[in-house]
Length: 100
Image (tube, rainbow, N blue to C red):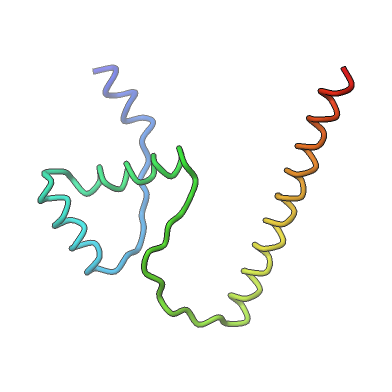
């Protein structure tokens, strides 16, 4: 029982909102495979952690409000800073290797 207790101790609950039709379709597909929908979602999260990429298949039309545009601009700035820092650090690694 100790192993199960430790396993449950490290678990958390993730609550997400999705369209009811999407949830129902996903549950139906999972059931066809004989798998619980929870396992499908956990697997998707594990895959994202192992390979942090996002593929968006069907784009929905999104109205870009001033508030949304501001958030997108902030994200763009953060990404630019991160890429600039990564580039600067990669150059540092080269300098350290050549000056040994």
